[in-house]
Length: 399
Image (tube, rainbow, N blue to C red):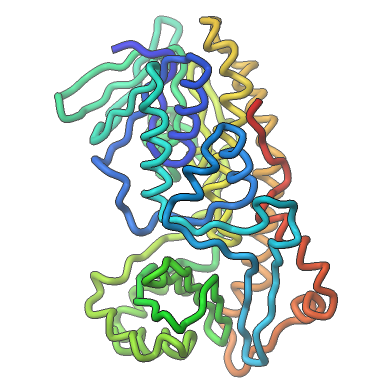
């Protein structure tokens, strides 16, 4: 099988890249190792920068029709009260909100739209098993295994969008620089009642914080724990976890019994890393394959989508014209996306070091720190964290 571009990974970066390249007439094949997109641990925070880009390609209405929740502000509850820490309504309309939409719905929408284009192919349940090389040693495609058996897919460019445990990255022998993270995340769902209110609720107290994401009839909950502390939490028992959840989110106290077994609780090991070099001859890595993000700010999806938009805009014309993509071209993509990646990760590292880590080891009463109280006193300042998270350092656009 031959294709101009082989995209490994059918997540947000891979499908957006495949869609945008196919719109330019580039023959592109996306490989997704799972038969569907139904994995509950996928992030679902879609920020204004991504919504703006979807408008630019005519998918704004399709996105708005998905079963999501629009949130205009981020609130954090401390022992001394609730504070709004980011006001997305102060951003430019029409997307002056964060959209929480189950990622599988988002990905299915992208896949369905891309499938309408004659140069796009999505191979589900297809796992990459190795790389192809040409006579010069450059990457020339992939070997894969799918429902029809083993296959070889030859391509002029291979783009790795296969996440923080990227097989392509391993095959290339590339090792990211790891940055320490103080926390892991327990991921579970608890039902939401009609009188609970809506939006995004974050409860901060001694021992850490918990985020409850409104998904309509249930909350998707992210419960932060100290790095490597999962075994200790399991040893304490499920009743102890239920008690802690109820303490952090009292509104859920009558429903914590829905955590019936440990199978209802998923562990997300938090990573924060970055490759120094995102490319080799014939291959480019973007999204989490190039830079795994911390969950702070919920920016992972949006950084990946922005990477894909920049890649399609910068490389698409050459690929559509049948011209070879050089390492200079691939390096230009990395240079374009390097600044927003580094700045965002540095903000996340500072937040982990100065906020999250102390909270995870704190005892007693936790009151809002001075910067949070300042945001309440001067509400206009809430536009700054909203802009940093919602739009980012260098939002990409589609011409």
